[in-house]
Length: 285
Ligand code: NAP
Image 1 (cartoon, rainbow, N blue to C red):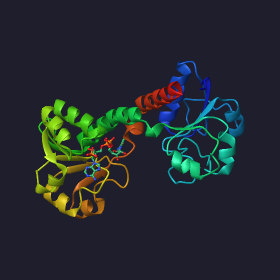
Image 2: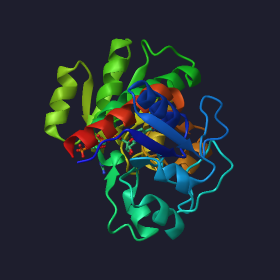
Image 3: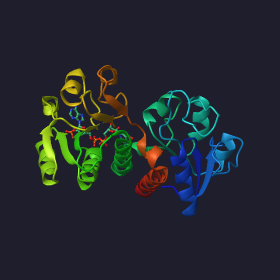
C-alpha cells in the first residue's frame, strides 16, 4: 500500500501533460520531466535523479518507446535511453508504465514495483470511445459521402467495434459488423446492425467505408478486390494492422492506417483515462 502525493511524469505526449494537470487539480503534486517543449507546464528539475527522488512514484509514457531504445519523449529533444542508468534511477519508486515487458528487459527491475496501465481492461474499454470518434472524423474527412446513408462495414466486434457500430448506427449509416462468435453476431443483430461472419467478408458487399479493428491480416488482396474497390478503408488495428496497404495502393484503394487516435483526437480525455486507471491500481493495492 502506498500513497501518491507527488508524481514524477517522465516523457510522453499531451495525454501525459493533461493527466498530470488533472492530478494537480486533484491535489496531487505532479512533476514533469522531458517535456520542456510544452508551454502548458513548468519543469522544476534539471536532473531526472532529483525529480524522481522527490516523488512517491513514476509515470512512464504511452507508448513506452517508439524505437525500443529510448523513452517516448515527443515534447522534448532529450533522449532518455532505456538502460541500466534509467533503471537505477526509477526502480526504487513504484513505476506506472506501458509495455512493462520491454522495460524489464532494459535493466534489473527484479525488486521494482511495476504497474502496467496498458494491461488494464478499463483503459482499453474507455479508449475505445476516442478511438471510435477519431475513426469517424477520418471517415467524414475522407469520404465524399455523408455518414448518414453510407454503407459501412466494421470488421471485428470487440471494444472498438461495439462503440463504433453504435455511433455509426446512430448517425444513420447502414452498418454491417463482422464477428466470429455466435454471441457477438446475435448482439450485432439486436443492436440494429447487419451481422456477418468474419470469414465471409470476402464474399462481397459494396461498402462505402470499411473500418478494420481486427489485429490480423483480414484485408488481403482477395478480400480487398472483393469488397473495397470503391471503398474508403480505415484500419484501426495496431501495427502491423489488418490491411495489405501495398496491395490497396496498387489497386487504387484509399486505405488509411489510423493509429494512436485517443492521444491525437482527445488528449484531455485520454489523459483522464490514464489518470483514473492509475488511481484504480493504487486503490487496489
Ligand atoms: P478487442 O476488443 O480485442 O477486439 C478485437 C476483435 O477482433 C474481436 O472481435 C475479435 O474477435 C476479433 N479478432 C481478433 N483476432 C481475430 C482473428 N484472427 N480473426 C477474426 N477475428 C479476430 O480489441 P479492441 O480494443 O477493439 O482493439 C482492436 C485493435 O485496435 C487492437 O489492435 C488495438 O490494439 C487497436 N487499437 C487501436 C487504437 C487506435 O487509435 N487506432 C486505439 C486502441 C486500440 P474475438 O472476440 O472472437 O476474439
